[in-house]
Amino acid sequence: MNSHQIDIVRLAWARELGLPDDASLDDAERLHVVDDDATRLTFVVLDGHAVLVGPGDILDRAEALGNDVLATRDGLAELAGQRRGRCGGPQVLAFLDDSRDDVRVEHPLISHDGHDVDRVLALVPPDDATGIRAVGVDSWFTVFDDADGEDDALPAAAAGYVEWRGFLADTVAVTVPSRRRRGYGSTAARLATNEAIDAGLVPQWSVPMDNATARLFGLSLGFTELGVHIGMELTDPG
Image (tube, rainbow, N blue to C red):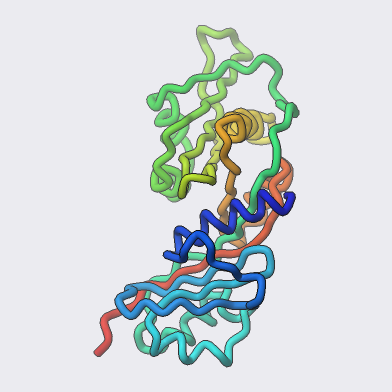
């Protein structure tokens, strides 16, 4: 990732966190953004710089906690105190700098039809399917296993992206369990990321920090891990 691409990533996340486009983190290891109406704590680290967003009375207690602590469920729960709620994350944030031509399935049979994506999602673990659908992808690539001919081809993997904050392409990929390790998933993902880059977007790969398989998959596609994102819902003060 070059400095211009990193600036694009930081700009997209600044918009997500409610910061002005010209906000600079260069002079601060961590920026606290007070939002007394916030119903969740949000902590993001990108390229060594961090932003913590939440109510002022909670952020006042954060001074004693390091970034490595806040990037954990226990750390965020400690900060939230009695207002702690459901936690999402931590998620690793990784980004892709350029298109590539390493498509593992030669001359892949592909579809852009959402119906074929549904066929893939019907064959994967329910939690995976729910997570994929939650992203709201609007550009899909489904790759088929056509070893028995095109007429008998079966959907093997799907990948896609949705434009996020005007600059990034939030990317997802999933493979039917019986067809893993054959290149279908990486082929679908490569087609999706190449299209996103052609559209002027920077692909983003956001996966659970403890999901080694998903992280390795992203690295195999060329993604560079640049940060982490974690959020915790806040209960009503009482």
